[in-house]
Amino acid sequence: MSGTHPQPIRQASASRFAGKRGQAGTLLLYPDRLVHVASNVMQVGMFGGAIGALLAQQVAKQRAAGRAAQGGKGVLEVPLSEVSAVNRARQGLNRNVLEVCTVDGTTVRFGVKFDRWAPDLARLVPGGVGTPSPPG
Image 1 (cartoon, rainbow, N blue to C red):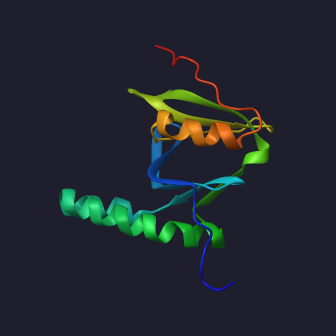
Image 2 (cartoon, helix red, strand yellow):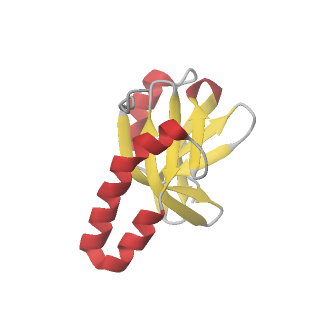
Image 3 (cartoon, one colour):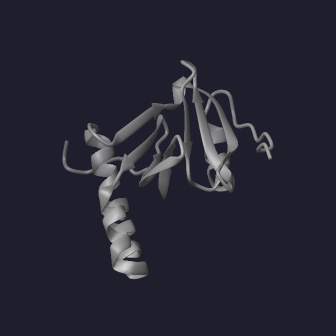
């Protein structure tokens, strides 16, 4: 490989929710997969206040594509061919969470704005995108 990585269709800072906790990182959408790259840089950046958090967010986004290509620890890859459903979900007080379900029954939630990601996912996911009302 020449050191360049394919450009994602969409990219945003996002938490991956596991239980009640979130794992900070970057979510990337490629034509064939959805990838979450965890980043401790973002957590460390919070100690620098608002400016530290913004700088950390930019560093994490810049590194995410390279880490997604390498894979390994902290990289969660979901092939779009294995996605059975994409829905709007709720996590705590946030009612605009992206929920991805796979054919093996795995469900993953990401803290990104569902409305911004739904159009791209609707074009790429075989089953399309649903928008059920969040409970509560």
